[in-house]
Image (tube, rainbow, N blue to C red):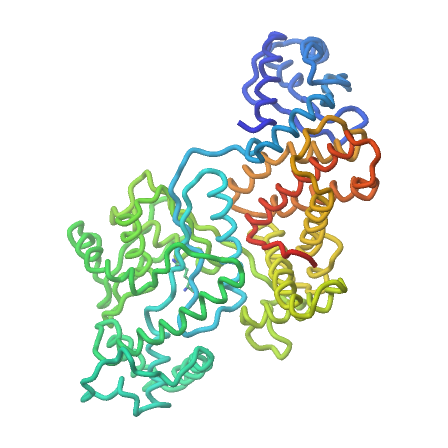
Length: 582
Ligand code: ARG
């Protein structure tokens, strides 16, 4: 159990000694530090339960608290608020425990297997800023869950099935009609065929095809036919499709990896559709499907629905399957192959209804039992200064690559450290750019929209990724300069600023709990800033390395090391890499 929760448990015992039972202790860091570092507010509640004067109760608790050497400055304010502080000796003990094992300050949870679905990039289309938040939030939630004792697995769930691919191949057919893929008489192997098309070409082809399909019914119809051919694995078309997926996947992997986003599973919707037949059979056996105007649907309405929820379209009247159906097949596959306790979907807010339909249908079909939890985790949009989804200067779609390049150009300008060689600059500005983007993206509460302000987010001062990186690198360099083989235990500290750091460190378990419970990283992002600022205030006030009192100097360096290690851990949860220098 974490130090702070242990402490709470002990205080509950102390209150019991005083004669009172409490369920949940109401102890909080005090914002009136002159009165004490913590505030206990339980006397008020107890007064009601025990029909006693709260002040009398508070006095009895204080009497017991005073017997414990860990507390000092114990006093009662107002009608019965108890204030107290932590003895320095006890704080040394706390710090030395953290120094030995930073995880002594983290509460692990009972193991649970969770699959996270937070990719959703579409093959042959560029990743855009909409995919950014899924990737950032999902990756960080996965890292947080793993840190807290879950077994969390990420699945990229690539969009490689359905109409967009039919459109792309239709356009390729028009631009390169002589390719063997379209030649019915071609009998050779497709494996070693060179495709004269790069990922960049693909990204250009999709918008062209999509526009043509909107204007030309025949073009659309042909694309549909091609989609069907791919899905039926027809020779030529299917082979070209495979090639396109390969090219595009490689590029998608690169972009995700730039963002420090890694998936354990790289399934696409097409892999999941291998489970469609089985799903269909289950639906038929259980008599779930209804006929409706040539389509097959699943009624998922419930009696207590406040507003009507449309039925799930399982098979369309033209015999193709819907996006909902691919997600149902995916659930079946995941249950069969991984049997997770939970599946979390980190997908933008527009898809909320889609998931409600899918979740309900999966229960109705019976592929999900009551013990398996499906959770939709939505998020707000990243907007431009005009309050609309972020665009390029000329109003075009902001692809993820463009965004990264834009921010990188900015962070590069801001690297002024002269000891950094030109050739190092590239990778450093890259790390700083990613930190800029990710920190800004994880700082607001998940459901809140935010405006992308490049100047503000890339600033070295303030609540920014670069500020955190810079400060953390400075901690590391201080530790390196101190050149100590074995860190000495903390045995002497003197000021309020150090106390601030300790209290902030102690608070970590509550932050992590809240982040995991709300599935939002904002608490952690805020906490990192708070801890780093507390450390920097202490740093500004003291000359650590040249301090004459060795005992004090050693204690300071150990304190620095603890903050440094925690910063590394939390930045890693946010998916932020710390460069060697900046
Ligand atoms: N490819 C989809 C899109 O771009 C997102 C997929 C989200 N995940 C899911 N299981 N449906 O809209």
